[in-house]
Image (cartoon, rainbow, N blue to C red; front, side, top):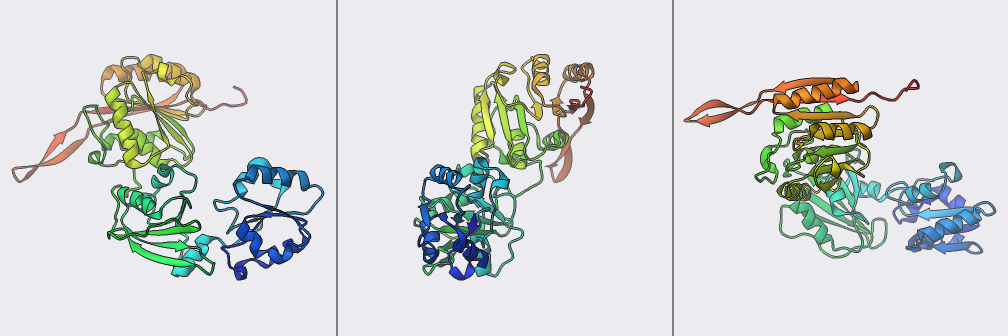
Length: 407
């Protein structure tokens, strides 16, 4: 497999032309095949369109008796065909020759470094997947979905709170190349459908509704209702005690407004959050906050635990924020499915919850700890600052023993 770069023959690596001279079967998109046209005489050729399964089957059939070459646009490892072929073949069954990517060429055109850029793709993905990552940096590249108006995508970006400037890069490396600058703060934005385009976005002036990468989002940024919400100071400690890894599966039991689920999902990349809530208003609020923050990693589970937990993927981390009087049942169920080395965090307002959780962790052999938080917030009254205390909260966290050879 070889990357053909962004479309300019001069940007194709010399080794690719050598491979084409040796190849007996060549598969590639129409543009890539047209670049290699002079090498295709006498070769078996297959055009890649929406037929990846057929291409993979042909490659598998021929690779033991012919020299097979698959051509890809740009770099095949950047939102390219490498991922698909790895699911069909063993890594040792094929080789990859990288190409100059459209991302490299875009930043070269702009004369900008790009080691700090976040690379995203809107092609064939739910919008919330890439929108949710716009708070993770100040410089972005977004591969566009060729079937959608770029104005629609820019409108989504603007509504998400992203402020700054950008460039629409169309047909990079081809004779029809265009670079169209724009500002998200102005009313006039590029429109139209472009089949071979990407966006470069730069955040400016700290512009975003939710630009922070630290946990503990301000309470006021969430959609609120009558359902109780974990305050930002307590949320920060809960997140610290969860000790998350990007791929984790997390259960938020008694999720309320979903504030913890939102915070967890913003920290994950590849993981999932299951927000379990029995109150109808809570379910609506979780969904509203999931939409507001564009977090597709949150799955809302309407129902009462522990019954509502049946059939969910085994968790790495669990928060039990609300139990409806069934704390022991919930903890027992969670213990039965929690992965070895997994953690449970229980924020508690009452001494009874503290006692029940502590006894459970002791009896099950968890390594556990407890902190008590007393938070007072400053409030201006009559020109003077007074401290207004919030309810004390206990945060109890336990870690299930990891599996050993002796287990």
